[in-house]
Length: 492
Image (cartoon, rainbow, N blue to C red; front, top):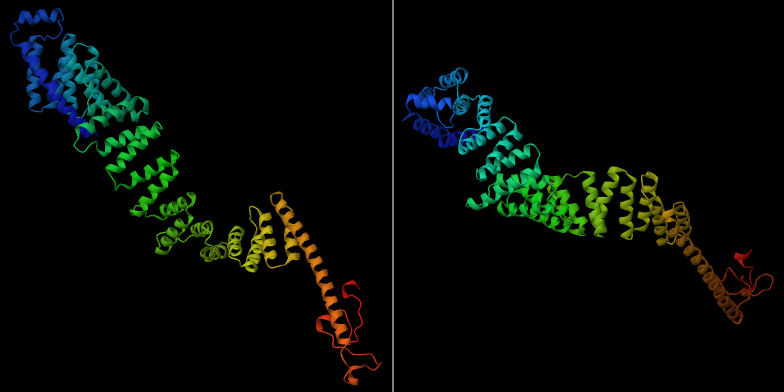
């Protein structure tokens, strides 16, 4: 920045300060007689130099051409310190000494001389404005941004046209003093001029300057429009795409942000493990878990995503949300056995349950409960009860549902299941009794049929002379071998 300012100052000086000084001095000194010069000094007429001051000034300007800056500075200092000068003469000499000090890299001295020159308010307006611009830029180099801003803005207020370079410098200076409201118009002006003047439009630095102001002032719509232009202008710049996606999310356009991230992935811009994991999470958030799981599994297998427990959990959850239970189970099993955490066993148990592997699911749910750390253990007891129901273990299911009654959030569901079990048991009992009665009636018919059979052998009688009947096995609980009704075994 200092090099560019020094170059600008040198060029400005060549155009305005030095040339104007030589012309003014030459015109003022030539054609003046000593009495006239003396009279001019005595009445302090502005814009007129005495012969002695003018002649010595021309000598020093010649030395400037030879770049004898130390001698030049000493000469001007002698004249300023020793001479009886008019305000105009003092202003001219201070301006010239400031130039010498600038060339000697004495920026503080140059600033002091030029500010004193401006304060005398005797130079022509164009010359004074040139000093305001140059001094303002030097003040910015010296980190006195506010003073520099004030001088340059004073020159603009006095007729200096605002151009692209001045606007950019003022925007940068306002940014340094965190006056974003004051600097925004300059940033916009510099950007607009660059878009008009440059064949390819504004450069990256000009875009970045305006973007900085939009960011600081939370001007999200303007920021988004500018970022869209930057993405179009520099389509291979990853940082632009990343910022673009972030802005879309901030503006509530999450789906668009997801699409931008997906485009970045397809174009090979997302390379780090964290970026790829974030994209997988995007898939989940926007209700496309299957696509996220496929992508994440591919990147895990390729080694671009770290196979950490957290990333494996994300993959398992994506498969779960996609209801791809078979693909989720090996990942969930690995996560659970690696972490040993209750919630991971819970997720594994759910996948087993959804896959219809109820006995295994019951065992894993019980492990989850034993390991602890569950956010809703009542729900897991309900799952245990459901798994036992699927295995027709009504007693075990009832015990699990009774445990689920201990939590408010699972109480209603568990109570409903317990009522269902009681109802089912009652129905089963009625069915069993009906089946028992039907069986007894069928057996009575079988016994009667057996009695009517013709006796063909003495062996069909027992030692007491009672007929031995061929009783079907299913009737043995209710009838003895002689066809007599036995006491009901369920009612003894």
